[in-house]
Length: 321
Ligand SMILES: [Fe+2]
Ligand SMILES: [Fe+2]
Image 1 (cartoon, rainbow, N blue to C red):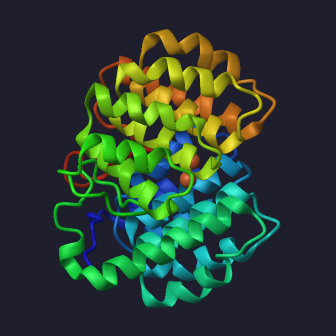
Image 2 (tube, rainbow, N blue to C red):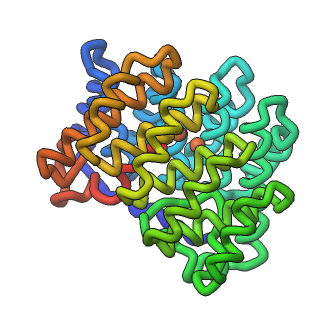
């Protein structure tokens, strides 16, 4: 299976200093995120071990992004620890969901058993994620390397499903995305095709999908809107973040997407929700404000400084999930 993760070699001392930063009590959450985004792109056991340690962090938001990054790395060494997270019913469902998605992203045969076991999990976001992951692995097995050709994410992300082909008519993508009777796998395929297409019309269709019942689908919509960084999505993302009745996972993803769009008009809203009663929303706003500040300063790399080729351990893969 094609491996999309491009990992770089860095000196072991640099990895050790990143791990030390994760362990230090005084390291703030935004600082931990910068460490995470660096580790995400570093090859080797040292980086894996530091990530496995980070899975024990006190913030569920941070733990879920650690699981996400482990999936994006597509490192088979992570399978065991991700399976343990998925099976741990005392863990936050959002973290378990991300562990399931990461196993799908790694996509190796040894991931199948635990994904099958949790495809009927009591937590709907976990069950739906495992079903998608199983279908992703099946799809890629059948399609072979050709299944990814033309489907690689322009955002350098390993996505939970391939997109529909780029030539699929916009109206067809809209219908599939918005139809609750369609398979979730196909709704996701429409979602990623719309993201890859981009532009005003695709963003408007994606915003319509916040009317869906599935929290899983809506959180992925918010995630791709963060990747698109389109100003048209700002009012909708703001409404989703403010809506206390919305699933916390969806509100969290809306907050991070607002940070990624980096519209200065979002600052007041993100500040207001940095003290949200729901910790994963509050933490997301704190991180989003940090990202926004970074964007405003014109800094290109959002990651902790490590040795190695310039920009090698940062760059395109800064998006959290
Ligand atoms: Fe997620
Ligand atoms: Fe997320």
